[in-house]
Every structure is written in C-alpha cells, then in structure tokens.
Amino acid sequence: MAFKSCRRDRVSIIHLLAFLSALLLPGAAAAVLHPLDGGGNFHSYVEIVNRWRDDGRLDVLVLIEVNNADLEYEEEASGMVGRLRVEVELESLDGRIIEEKRQVRTPGLSAQDAGSRTLFQIFGVVLEDVPFRTGKVTCRIYDVNRLRTGLYNQLARKNSRSESASLWYAEESPRPERGLALGDPLFLAQAPLKSWNPDNAAKADPVSGWLHDFMHPSRRFGLQQDRLQLFLPIWPQAGGLPSGQDLPDLRVQITNLDMNFVVNDTIRIDERGRLALVAGRSAGLFYELDVNLLPEGPYRLSLAPLDGQGRGVLRDFSVVWRLANLGRHRHQVLGEGRTVFRGKELDKFLDSSPAVQEKMLDEFWDALNPDPTNPVNEVYLEFQYRLAYVRQFLGGFGEFGAADDRGELFLMLGPPDELKIERMPMNEMDQDDARIQVFNRFAPDREGSWAKGDPAEGTSEPLNPYDTIGGLPMPNSFHAERERGAKRYSATHTYAFELWVYHNGGHDLFLNRFSQRGMGQRFLFVDRTGAGDYVLESSNVMQGDE
Image (tube, rainbow, N blue to C red; front, side, top):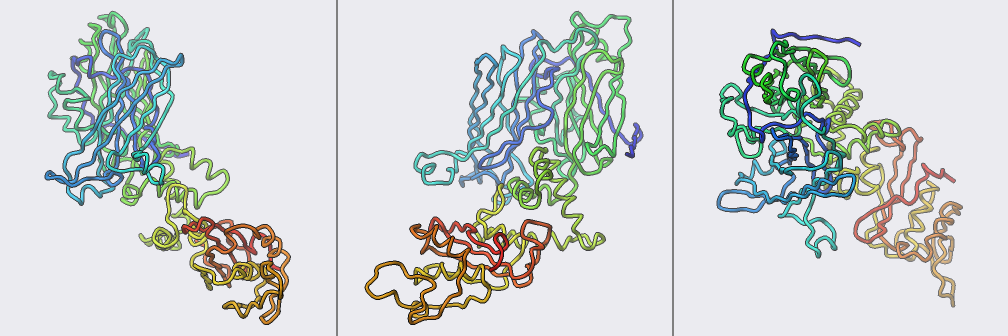
C-alpha cells in the first residue's frame, strides 16, 4: 500500500483560539463517526453533535440536511416555499425520553433552485440539558406539503417522511482526567473564517449565530466546497493545566479509507489558547484544509494531542469530484446497487456509507468502460437510457430497484426481440397459450377465439388448451400444464400479460442472473393486481425448454 504525505506548504490552516460561551462548545465525546443516512420517502443527512456548557450540563445538537429536489413546494409571493416538521427523540437505556419538535419554513426559492439536486436546506434542533449519557437518538423529518403514496396514507393524511436512528453516547464530563480533550467537531462549508471575530462569542452560536449559516451536516467536500472547514472545541482538565506545563500540539491525520492516501499535519495552539486552557477555561479552534489535495473517496479525520494524554476525536467525511455523484438521487444510488451487485458485494454495498456506495458504483461502471480514454462511458450511458425507459414505461425505479420484473429484465438484457402484449385477453386460453410458448418455441400463435377450438358440447368446463376441436392444436407442455393447474381458479388467469422473447440471449451490460443462459430466452409476465404491476411467472431460463 502506497502512502503519500503532505506538509504545511500546501495545507492552509487557520486557528483562532478564543474564550467561547457555553452554548458554542460541543462536547468531547464521540457522538457518531459519520452522518446518519435518513431514509423513507426522501433522503436526509443527520449530524449529531454533543455541546457542553461550562457548568457541565450537556446539550445535544441535531443538524439536518435535505436536498431541495426531494421536497414539495407551494408557490407564494416570495417564491416556492417548502414546509417541514422535525421530531427528535433521545431515549436513555432506562426508558427516559427527551423530545423536541420544530416547524421549518424554507425561504422563497425560484423554480430552478427548488428543483436542484445540488442545493440543500439545512436546519437544526437542540435537546437541552440532557441528564443521561447513553441512549438512542431518532430523527424524523416530515414534508408537510406532500402526502405519502397509497390510499390509506392519503386518507389518513400521513406526510412523507425521512427517518434515521442511531445509538448515542457522551462522556460524563467534557474535561479529561489529565491533559486536553477535543470535543465534537462542527463541519462548515464556505465559512469566511478570516473575517470572524474570535472575541464575539455570541455571534458564533451554532443554533442562531454566525456558525449556523455555514454548517455542513453531510460532510461532502470537493465540488460542493473545495475547502474542508471545521470548528473544534478544546477542554482542559479540571482546574486547568499546570502553569509551567508545555502545551502539546495537536496531530491531524486525514486517511483515505481505501488506505492509499494520507495527509499528516500538526497544529500549534497559540498564546491566546494557552492562557485560556491554563486558567481552566475552554477554547475553540478553526481548521481549514484545501481538499484539492485529496482524491475522490471516503476519508477519516483524526485529531489528538501529541503528548498522548487526554482525548481525541475521529470523524468521517467524503470528497466528491464528479458532478454525477452530486446530482444522483439517493434512491437511484441504492436502486443501482441492488441491481448490479450480488452476494457479498451487495451486503458490503448496503452496509457502507453513502460516499462508499457511490465509490463502489463508480468503480463498477469504470471497470465496464470499453474505452477508458473516452470521458463518456458508453456502457453506463446505455444503462441510463434503459433506466429512463423503465421509469417512464415499465413501472418505475426506486431505492429497491425496478418496481416490477419487466423493468429489472429490461435493465439486465435490454429490449426483447419479440414482444407479445395482451392488455385485455379476449379468450381465457390466451394466457395458457403463452405459457406453452414459454417452454416450446415451436408452439403456434392462435390469435382470436375460433383458432383455439370450441368447448366440448354439453360441458361447462373451461376450455382445454390441448383441445383441437375446430381449431389449431397446441403441443403438450408438462411445465405449462403444471402452472396452468396451479392457476386454474385464480383471477389472474384472465389478466393482462406480456411474453418477452430474446433470440440471441439479449444484450447484457453486466453479469447478472439472466446473462449467458443460451439463446431463445422467453419470459412471461402477468399483471397480478390488474393495476399494471407485472410479475415474472414463467421462464424457460429457470425451468428449461421442452
């Protein structure tokens, strides 16, 4: 494994140490290593930050980021306005619960900004004076302007929501037994750090002051923000540091989680900070890094005192240099992963952070690029064409992949060579004929009702698909007869269906469960609900020809 190391010559650091009010300083305990990934009807990022007061009481700050395009807006005089309801619950191990709710109204936006996938709404909720130090935090964000899909949800007026939950932990005190302790860092974006006045702590309140306008819960840097910025609180041991003790520098290490790149640096605490810490007061530090140094991917930030005493912090963030990653809907990321990965690779994908998931998809499609020198990956472009067709004509596409089996097959093998569609079968034997054609490629098409033959005189039994009285005979098929027997009394026996035929095995973009299965593949899809939800019921790929 190759490691690279960068020193101060290309690393820009701004460290302004100040006497800060209690409301400014997050705590020293590790709340969560990476942002929570909220899911449901839309995607959200949730950041949990412990914020300690000077008197030892603890507040928990919950920061939320939602993509503009994921929200529903109403047109007002000021522009397109979205409305959200946020509910945060913190529950201790013994059942004590602290709740906080907040109504959020977005500023008026233009129609273009409201539909953007690269612009976000960021807001926060504070749980004040938390008496316990271990528990579970749950965050629910409701889009007040949009109801969930489904008849019951529409009648019950249930709003669309995004939900996340995580175990939560805080130290008993922000102060270490010895040395220095670093508190939860607050990630920022596009903050004018040089213009901040460190003596004006009130304006630096993360809830309503100066820092509030620059918070960055998703921790995604690169195209969105080419400078990694964070605010870091520092706490001394009780009673302050001994006056004659040398103040340790802080070690900064930024490591690519693929273990192929690392940045090491050292931050020296200046005289202002030294005086505050010796006196037993907390201090604050701003850190800034030019992320143009960093390749795209997931990273881990570690900060700790160099003397090995006290407590440090670990946090994850990501660097994104591809516009497609910023514009890709979160549901598309999950849907793509569930479509292209299988087995252990799929398990790894689902267990990974959003940044790692996007990186896995990029590496997957890059490996299939027929011409790596071409900036346009023709294989992925074809997948996008298929995806657009599935969304419009084949039931849709979401976080679990294609909404019905036709869409999944279309993504895997492309359009069929032959397609037989019966939206309203005119004869109850139409679907039986299609089942026989799945397993016997020489079975004839018997269009209309007369070609199938008349029922036996004096009987009321359903027509036998092998009855040849007055019509074209069908070959016998053991597989089709078995399926027909199972469906004999099912209402779906006369529902709409589609028969897809691939003469040459289709055109697979990537290895999947239907690829490389020979020629003459045939698939029967039946609309089981009568509402356009097609399910794969028969295929010679799975059961073989007769």
